[in-house]
Image (cartoon, rainbow, N blue to C red; front, side, top):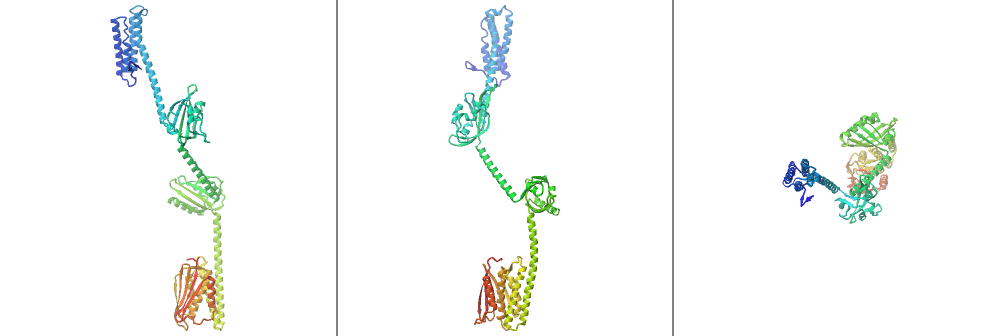
Length: 595
């Protein structure tokens, strides 16, 4: 309020000094009024009071001026009452009316000032409330608006509305203008103005919490909005306004979508894992190292003869299922894995709840951070029984092979004995020579068979060792001849190729011993092996008289060499120089042979 350009001072920040000055100003005005009334009775002596009260309000504030006017009014009324006692019927004269008006002026000014201060405070509080509401709207991290009912006029809009909705300030003045905004139904149809949540709240009182829909901003950018809206009612329940807020939740929707996809993948993976475990007859278990409690899934419970449902028990109760002969070892294996934080693997004999013995393969991993051990269990009883049956079959096979080897050795020895006996009764030198060759060949077969007996796999023999054994036995045929070895092949051959190769070498060495050094002449025979890729070369060389220039009729030895070489696909190349010896080289493809 202002009078002649003067504004009343607000009542905030007042001190005692302001109140004392206001009282002093009103007091001086009363003294001046009394003086004027004494000097010029009947004059409107109350005229200084109103300017004084206004001046006190300007200088000292509304409240001090009102209080000073109140005190001055009381004093002025008291003076008027005292004065009225000195005259008769003061209200009946003009003089009395003037003095009564002067007496009531200050109380009237006080009342006016108190009312003005109340109105000013009310307006200030209302303005502060509006400012706080505006500040709240500015702080809302989304679009917010208030619509007036029933006109639909926009009363307030948050600062973030333009960022969220993409529309500038002033584009919406009434609810009907929302038709230009970009709300979209699931089928892509744009929202009508009355379909927006804030309009529904304004017209029907609907309360909307967390409604989501797609929203197209100007410029074709599409976002996801989450909208809240509700009506504002007065004391009688009548809708006077509606409040709405919209938040851009595109990032949250995308995160939720990714989370749902991740959860779907994890659920699918869990289903696949569970299916794989079920197909493999595998159960899951978990040991809590802090509580010493074990959780078993339904599969393990069923394997132990318990009801087919998840079960939890103490570690001590679980160990009672372990066969007494395996308990100490099983505890030691588990304790070592837990102490080292290593993977746990064991096969344990257990007895089910019905006492049935079973074998279980137990695997686990130690989670040090979680103080847990998790793992799987699989029933391997059938496999263990098959292995035991296989071991028994292998033992039986070994016995049979030992018996067969014994019988074969005896049979070969019997053949050698018969051939030796026949050779002793034969007078024909050629027949005795043929029988001697046969005996050597039988011995060669026996040597190879003996080598197979001592082989780890009972199927292949080391060529170098086989040839040494053959030469050691044949060396007795001509003690004056020295056999020298140079074995470098290091190849193992199966019996199907080793026996024919041994027979060929036997024939070549025998021929060299018998014919290369006649009449007890000393000499040397060299036997060498080498492997070049997949080709095995065996060389028998002597420094004897060499082969005769005229070819002789092929004997039994030559026939054996040709037949055995052809059987294993080998070639035999012979080179001889009269007086300088003979060299025979056997070449055999050993593809697939073991090193």
